[in-house]
Length: 558
Image (cartoon, rainbow, N blue to C red; front, top):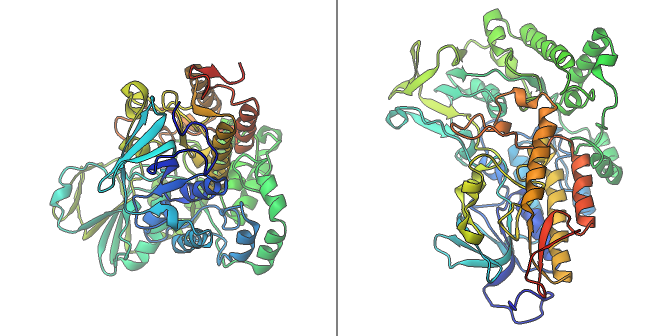
């Protein structure tokens, strides 16, 4: 019997170097996972590649970086005193404010003492005989733990395009996901922004106000809605805080984990086109994206209703942008609205009315190389001093594939996922016992309010590990059949919507050679939570549990 397979905290002979749980990543997921497991009495250590807490909010410091979920919603719910004491200055929080909040949480709950920073995990290997994970990082002895939790984030592996000649560029170039912490002074500079996704839409107005001239290289136009951001209404904040318990409970019953937007019951096909337009106008005036996504129960199913919304937004673009040719280039026409990430902006379309901004049609005249002086397309060379690549991330799977993760029989996660990610519930992977994923592929993750989904996953994982401790279970992993059923279910749900119509990062389309698989679970956070809770209540149905007294496999619920 392995001497760590049956014990409560403080009991039994424990090797001094053996942790109960190792957590990879000190972003919002890793921090709450640490808090939750520590509260349950486990010995936990977190290892973080960056120099501080915050994950995406630590790295993404580009001009205009801001959350597209309202501040009062995009926050932890696990501690009411924390909810009441923190004050948000604006309706939508900026990156510096969110990072201040995350640091406040780390300090308030004394989390840093169990976090090792500036440490990038290189390998993670499960030893079946000892039922222990061993992780390695440069400059550290092996890290050993019974359970491993990957809190590596969904958007944490920047994708820099492999343009010919990039190394020859004589100016400065940056990727938005690893923007210099000290900032970049773009005053008087000729700047190129490559990309027009959510990040670029946030940064372009800020850069245009600084730069001598800004060239925006757009391959694909994206839909963006106005944020209507403003200083926080203190009366609204007080009312919100007074009803936080009800708000959080309501969020659990919604599609995206955001209160105020209940599950829609009306079909867009039941109302007239005039009523549809009136509804979209009201949502446009209100600001935000969740209202559009939840206004009708078939908004992302009905092509007819979706096209009315898409044309409504195109009309707003044409009204805003003075040059008709530029306006037309900015009007998305190759995907349904909402099937790619629906962006949120402040003054994005208005920016193209500035004399110092030029929109380059990188679809009609693609970039062919970076030259010492700038960017060459099939049409011309554009000379610039600075290039900002807003080209996104290897989303959902990139950070996990960067770590050499292997388990029983030497199978590597990157090999198992060669044809696309395979998980059960987005929480675990067959063949990799005792390894959990926070907001992994196959869960709502990026199609939800992320902190809502983070807390749900961390609570489920902690409850599972506590269940294992109480029932002398030494290992857990999904059954291969249950995993495959879940993957098929995730794809079946997506195929019933308009989501797969878009070449989005939801399907890995921004990464050359990446398998086209729709990765998030889009049945909604309420449906997903119910499934996870039911499976746990059934003794972890679909999982293979190994007990101390019965080292042979036993399928829970069978």
